[in-house]
Length: 301
Image 1 (tube, rainbow, N blue to C red):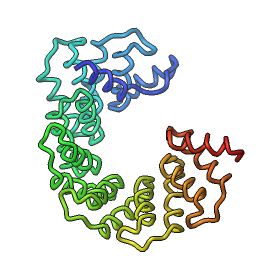
Image 2: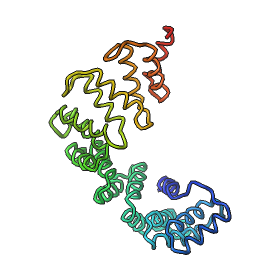
Image 3: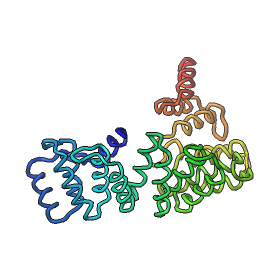
């Protein structure tokens, strides 16, 4: 259980260090029944950040936060009982508090599910993702879909993966739409249908938070002419969105742009621009981008 405890404490711990006067204000705020302040205090005492480590005090503050229906406070109590810190170790109580944390705070459901996944305890992972999904939380439904697609803790079932991806996509969760599109391109759990794949890739790409992989996959359809008329110019537009979408760089999108400029597909051939995109891809961990950049560099571009 130790990795879960470390992750949970990281989740609960405030990022900033409190000065003495700030700490006093925090205690006063907690005493005024502000559960979030109590949770922060519990976390500070649990790790000894700015104060002497004291699990007993951590329990007191987490308990107060939990009684005020703060999910992270309940999660903190669960952490103490699971680790036997300041209390007698009691996994049953830990699970009771974890479940209450999940019921109060959908983010805690996802966090607990992901933490158990890191321990490869997929039974617990599935339990918390299901709770999140049943609360109407898009990421919970998506993560369940991933479990079924990959056969982690469950029998691999692309049909069920599709069901959960669909739920996530209906909540406008872009990764759900994107992975649903991939199922249609690969004919997994559905009949292969590039037209439907295009619809879901478009929804992922045009999502208000942006999703570079959706744009990348949409661009790939236009390069290959799958479900659409082959159109390198449209592919270029989507690869551009993937390469720099809402400030997040997708290295494959950048690499693909480099290929279009190097080959003169949908754009005027320009090795210098190609090199620039290969460089961006390389800077973001794409080895093919590094190789292409080095090759153009050796050619004097």
